[in-house]
Length: 344
Image (cartoon, rainbow, N blue to C red; front, side):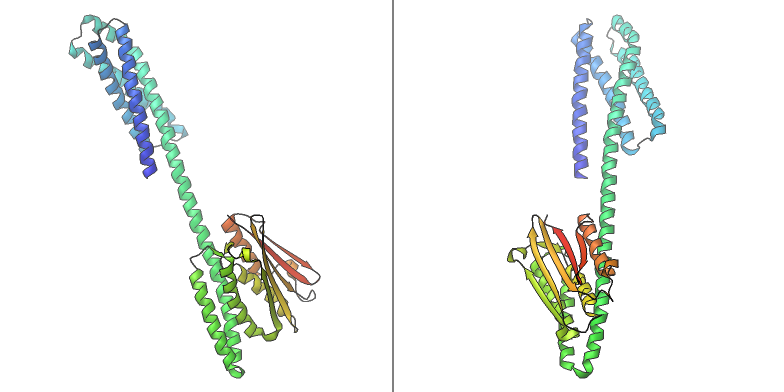
């Protein structure tokens, strides 16, 4: 709104200067025809005032009504009517000042010229006003479109975040239920860990990007819960350079990837499984790599791994507008997920 008012003031100032120049040129032209300066200035002043009123009317009309392509003929008619009104007003108002017969005859003979020049001036005003206000409308439309897209993106991001929690929560509650009977201490510890994890999740709900160090701290809470579920079978290796700690990434981006790795690494096996998580800075990217073993006879990582990877890829696209920030590989019974987070 402030920028629009500033642009409007600049437009008004520009046309005020143009009006003063127009009046000065007209007065000089009339004086060159032999009329005294008083007559020339009076004619130029009255003509310019009438023309300014007509230009204000056409500008004010276009401010609130933008004609479509089929309505420009009506705009030309409106400009012609205003020009005729200005020329006629000069023709019948100025003679009351009594500037003499010679001037009255000149005024009658110059009616067509005045009509034509007024039409050109009002037409230019109409064209500039139409372009000016259509540009403002276009900016407003783009702004509304951007705001709507941002609201839709934020809503989808929130929906993706909300989908992560119930799945993990149900699994954790089932594990707690299984531990209550024969390992009550473990169940109690898991409840505390789950509470800390969910509390951290709530704190992150309003954060789009967080430091990697904070994300890893939160991820460790999740891994501690999973280690209670799977016991000695789950081993993790986290290796990130110290300089990566301040790198930013979307909050809770790693948890679904690690959950996916645990799912395909442990669900179909009975032995120990090591999930490795590594991070490094390459150029202007934070590169995170998650690896897990899998049984090619029972798992099918090449055909997709459900909501985890698709949800992460969708979040990366919504935040960075790129589809090339995640890739997966399956070689030698090792499934690898690599994500690249631009450091803006």
